[in-house]
Image 1: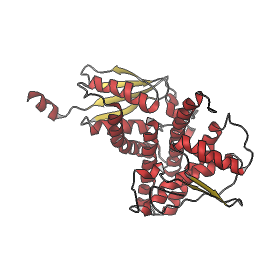
Image 2 (image 1 turned 90 degrees about the vertical axis):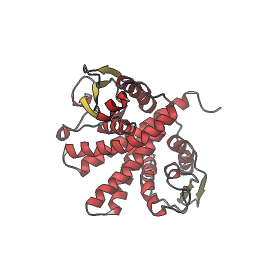
Image 3 (image 1 turned 60 degrees about the vertical axis):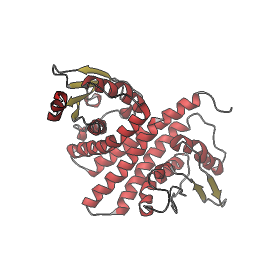
Image 4 (image 1 turned 180 degrees about the vertical axis):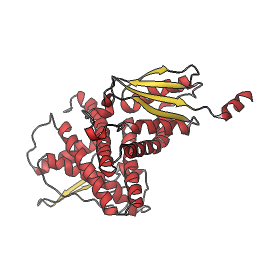
Length: 180
Length: 150
């Protein structure tokens, strides 16, 4: 074979770089179109939501995981299976509330910002990876779990790590089902 | 590879989002296509740089086109270009019979009028790649029956 064995690895890397570069071009274009950071953030979140509602089908088809029995299982599933499958990183999960419905995913390495050194000065409150929040929110909603997903810490804004907070919102129907 | 699904979804979202935004504004379709193409251009430039870091120098234009058809297309779309034609005077026609970004849309003539939107990014991608390899070009796309395109 004329190709070296490392080629396949490179190809996967390039596919991922294609996604990262495309995402970067998208954010740049949105920044040109919208003046306010909040508009860009909202737009990214909305796009992420539309992607998430479709991505969940792909995820469930590929991973064939069983139904999650608790919020913490769900959070673990997102971190260890979904992130690994799509972005190649595994964030660590920690539960940050006594009620057991608030979790944070801590990312040491965020592949989406591979080619980003720093945010430009006039875009200080831009959530560069807001798409991720929308994706998680959309995907969870399609499996009947309402959640709020936001960035708690962001390396691009000077924090040490990137932290995504997921707050599961309890729906009143849940309790009714449990009683039955 | 799961990345493919992500990229396909992101791409369709980009197209939809840009057109949605333009509908609320002045409704200029041409501008959206230009925006998509210029995004593809930037991505193409970056991608070709990373990709050809270790490959040998290209002998001529035809060599570059063959590289685009085989390696570049395989990495981006997981398949090779089905047909490459040229008139040896600078015009090349790349034909893909099952273009990945269109397979999910339809398998015939339905939605034909929407197809060009989805090709704008890829045209930019090719133009960006060629520009970083030293070739100035104009890239256009034509769809007569989904999911094949030229």
